[in-house]
Length: 323
Length: 278
Image (cartoon, rainbow over all chains, first blue to last red; front, top):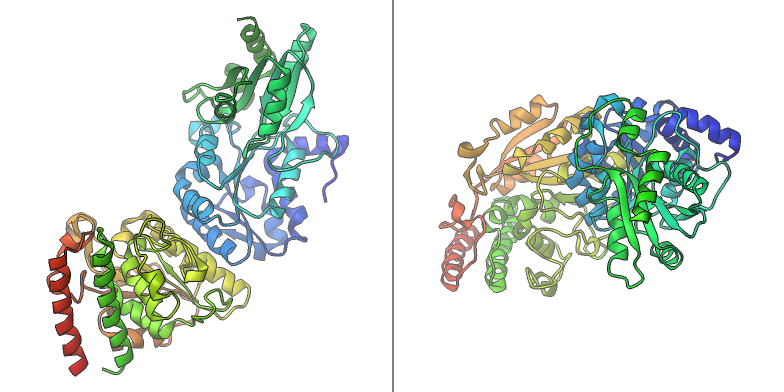
């Protein structure tokens, strides 16, 4: 059991999402002897080197063949294993998307497909390695649960919850080393239940993954200008926490979704799909990546360029509320 | 003929294919269903260790139909083996049926996996065979692929991994009928030297006449080298058993009219009589 404290949260943040994913897997291995972890030849890049060395019989490198990896994972799951199948986001969600559809969706095999380094965290590796459409694809597959944890502590909670959860999941890891800290103490984490992080009556910021911290920063900036923004960590993109959205619609005049994903088909779309037919619906602004392959640079540069940082988000929210 | 029971089972399955295809009144994958009948009769009549009264028996051998459109060769085998009832079998392609044009996973009906989209079954079979080895289980894993299906790149990802893992509990069978949806494989994307190709990838590969019951029994029961996955390349004829369907790709996916059904039954009747007399 990995304990979340201000100190561990800082340490984990330095390791980043991949390193902490590997540590979380390592920490639950003893309690889950029927767990298998698969990688399509990115084990070390996925923080799994220590797990591989400690539990060699529970690790399988399937080679650079993601489609086959997902099918093999399904076969193992069919025979009772809980399987974490890992690769970079586009190689699972898009290259092996039909394998995910058949095995995890149609047959509901107990496989947790883990997308390492989703969003634009791969920086200078470029758009070939980015996960900017993965939520749109994975979310549309029936039976799939889609989770995007906000920080390293949330990744630990997600991995622990995923190992207990019966059923297929797509786990989307965002951020890189020195990822900002959202959670500094233990918190109730339940798949499908959003975490309210801040209250406010002027607007609600609903975010997932790396953008939860950015939304908190934006809320701070807005507070300085006299606008009270609620912040919700919508870590589960499917099934969406409708009750949490109902509560927001009853208390704020506008909702802003923030995600490190194309604005087509991700969190913004999920929230819009939920709110649009309801009489209580409120105005909605979807902030995310534009419908382009972005000009590549280091991660922080791109987040700045695309306006996915606190001040830029606050500015867009202010304009939206004033319009 | 050393296995009259299996000959009779194959004949029974062919008749059932024609009756249920005609009965449903819809198009069905006749050619590829008929080509795999003898392989399936040997598997379900002799090779597979199954308990018809308990299709979920933990130690049962696993069979995956990777060429999912081959259900017309699969459901009659489940019927002949006593795993599904005549009543269930006759729901083939009815609205809301459990038995549609591609298998839908249903352990109570002996259907291990959902298929239809090609190139998935071998990967799943590897996971199953690997689980059996890790858990020290004695059951074997069998998977049937089409030769046209071997156009799919994912098949060869799986072929590589099975050899890498040395999965000798895994047997793949290729229904090598040399035809695919749009025509002859040699005009489309031919998988040349099928057995040699698998051997080159590190498999124990055996060519066999896919319509010779005795040869199929011998091939399945021959000792195989330890540490290698095994493939039986079953050379078959698409539409086998109904002369006017044999090697005629028009019957890949077609509706049987009343006249077709009668003509096919007549042809089959002669075949059954001829085989019974020999």
